[in-house]
Length: 213
Image (cartoon, one colour):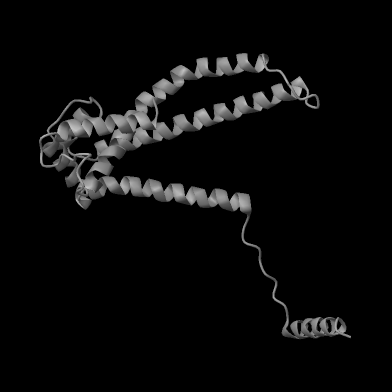
């Protein structure tokens, strides 16, 4: 299970519940999706991903043990075809790769757990009768009337979008911080006195004139 599969499932679900309604969008149609409808469906997709996060966490944890066991088994059987590189170095490289992969898997799980917490936070903030509609569709994966689902999402659209806008801003800020850590702050340009600039100019002219003597 990955993001591509989740996206495909969401597309199939939306196609199923909008079939025969005025919101049905055919792949053969040249009409653009109205702005409001695009916002609503994008928010639905965000909720769909967050609601799926819990199952993804379970899947990653179930598969992790077998996955890393296979990596370790592979590392024991590795051989080197470069005479200048020892087998030990090759094994050490694989060991580092496994450590990095474990850390990556840990970050994936933590990110998914935060996504599911975000979904629950949104649900906890809404009236119970509207939450029932959202839970039926996003958690229980049952077919609901699209007009009803769309109406609930539209009613709280700005409120829900704010959750994801904040998350995007936080991600951008983290990206800037990481970039700054890697590249460092912009170097400070030391100011040069005007007198020194004039001397440098005179020296450069003298050197240039000497070339034509």
